[in-house]
Length: 226
Length: 402
Ligand SMILES: Nc1ncnc2c1ncn2[C@@H]1O[C@H](COP(=O)(O)OP(=O)(O)O)[C@@H](O)[C@H]1O
Ligand SMILES: [Mg+2]
Image 1: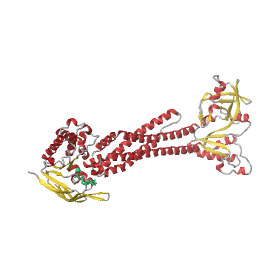
Image 2 (image 1 turned 120 degrees about the horizontal axis):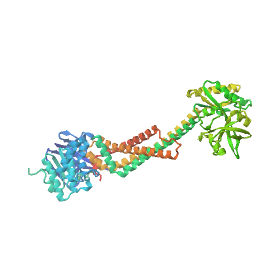
Image 3 (image 1 turned 45 degrees about the horizontal axis):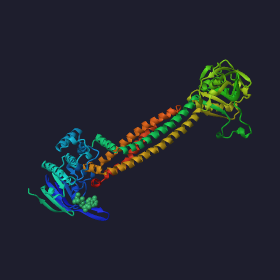
Image 4 (image 1 turned 180 degrees about the horizontal axis):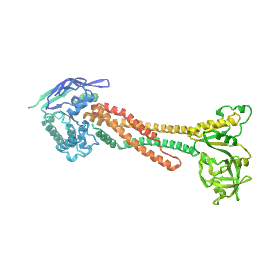
């Protein structure tokens, strides 16, 4: 489902070259729950961004759902992102001037989904994430946990194949983090492929497959219990 | 993204940055209002002048003694002869032209007018009954000069409204005697109040038969001959005939100048229209400045909203969609701004109209259209570049910016 062949990502800073990812070969299967761990600067976010088509590899081939997506142009990639990928960020990235409901609705607005269908889905999501009474609140009026729940609702509204989460609990306290985790894991049970970056070994251990990165390379790839 | 959603989203982000939006709309609307007010002033001036000319009379052709320099050298002058006077016979001869409906000879001079104990200096105009028709004058009381042979004098006069008031006050003037110089004239009529028209105020005139004026001033020379052509199309033939006839009368020498009201009017019209265009153009420049302002503010908006743009791209908005969203913002902004400007401009014109009631202000439709169009086009044009820049932003880089 996600297939990396010899993927590298090299940043050029001034006249220095920084290899954030070196020759990554990786295959993830649909429905897997994968955690990516490793020290800061090891390339976890870079890997996730490549998977989410937010960034392009310097070399190598990325196949998503059987399709080579590295050769697509900006517009085609945007459509793949829209239809197949959900992203949850560490800093939530909600639009400050829009209500919680509108933030959740945004991907469907961009996709041109008819209003009735949109509204129905938003109401449903607000309910299942316990946000119904916060629907009209703007992000600044919400707690961290609520904001991340809005972000997760937004990431799942288009029913993506893959849900990518970059340290989704990194900005939350322990208890709220747990809550968000169980939400994500519940989604996974519904058949979503969940890929999560974390540097909390405790959280990482909950995934069925754990990748460890150091210095732009995957140093271990272990499947837990079963 | 649906068009309605794009517009909603755009208006939402405009409302989100309230002071920035208001400032831009202000710039835009001042630009548009400037165009509207300035052109309506120019147009008002033009219509005022045209109106003044038309009030002089219609299809008017005027014969002046002497040849204006621009028309070339008068052979008579080379022989040391001075130009001949225009005389009544010349005026009567003009009636031979089929293009001419009627003529009115005109002599002008100053005289002391007195009635009872009151007296004052007045301008005396000697003419014929036709003057009333040619110059579209209105009578207040009594009658105008009677239809006589222009060569026969008659001791009657018609007073301008001011003269009547100053010499007679509230007394009945018609029927009374007025002394002009050393002669007495019976007042047979008073002109209706007309006010200034092209520098000539009929309110300050005393009108007497042309032959009487010749006697009063002891001169046969005419100051002007006014000609009314039979129709608008006959103005040019009337002018040509007039030149021809006077030339014959003056033994082959063309020593008069014949001007048509139309020609003078056309010149004024051209000059004033050019003036309107010029001020409109200057205002249009201020409109373009507003456009540049919009561009700058849109660029700032792109910079300020980098993260939002990154997010929209991450959520699957293609570059074209981002461009469309910024474009919609600019269009909304300049549309609302220019509509506000039109309203502001109309109010401005109305205020000017109140201050100068004689000026027929009102922006011409082409100026309104041009102002609106320029505003929209500059607003849109100058938003294209910022929108393209926004669309090109790299989603990761955009999101990473804090
Ligand atoms: N936009 C960038 N420009 C230059 N260097 C970058 C950029 N993004 C990441 N890097 C570098 O790539 C390496 C990996 O970064 P990242 O993937 O963010 O690490 P992690 O998420 O594991 O902390 C780091 O050395 C980082 O400095
Ligand atoms: Mg990171």
